[in-house]
Image (cartoon, rainbow, N blue to C red; front, side):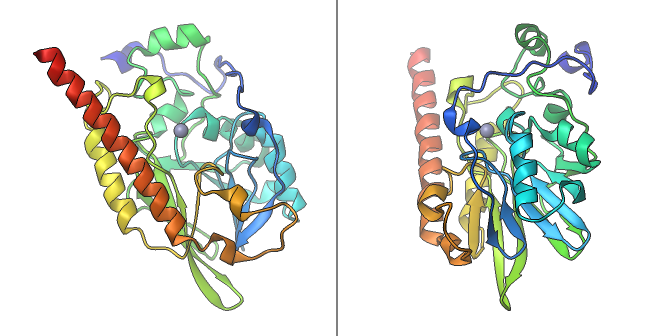
Length: 299
Ligand SMILES: [Zn+2]
């Protein structure tokens, strides 16, 4: 029982700040309105979204630690108050999307909601990640957790509903990239027109982190989970889509900082199809290659 052998990290315990090596993760981007009550408040590549309601706001993803200041400034630049953020939603428990949750919680008192399969990762500051087969060795190497551990206030599952004020958001479990990777959908209005919005977590595979699709001790059904995710993403219905990285939804082709508000920029079903087919193909190629290697090793 590896989990029991490892002490549970509290919020005050040590964590290290992984060096941010990608320029696009540090670079800011001006906040803008996507559609209706959905706003982009993230950086140049790490996407954070704010969904405003009449009872406070919902913030999706935080980027890295250094992103928190930028998110706060973005929220304020749109004329909203950061202290009105009431709910935090996590799309995938990788440090580049969640490292700021603990700090934002302290600043706003907001509650964090996440898929239950990602909760142990968030609460251990990234130590209980399925590709860390030896958490003790891992935390020794990084001097503790790799982001500040944060308590998950509500554990969600496929089909869970998140309600705040006049907004109702649905969680779709799109696991694989992390065990609890999630997509969120909700309906918004603009000039009397209804739009169904999907904030989609793409099914990319972290082969550089040693992820193996033919089975991992801490995630034995990884391939099955990915396949179900692609099936679900193929059937997903929406009018407008965005994603957890700007590059995933081709944001820089769609948005220039000086552009005027226009929801039609994000009506892009063809772009979505191309993206999910690309990730599914990469998944199948990687999986096939692994299986071939396994067979030849047995020979
Ligand atoms: Zn990730």
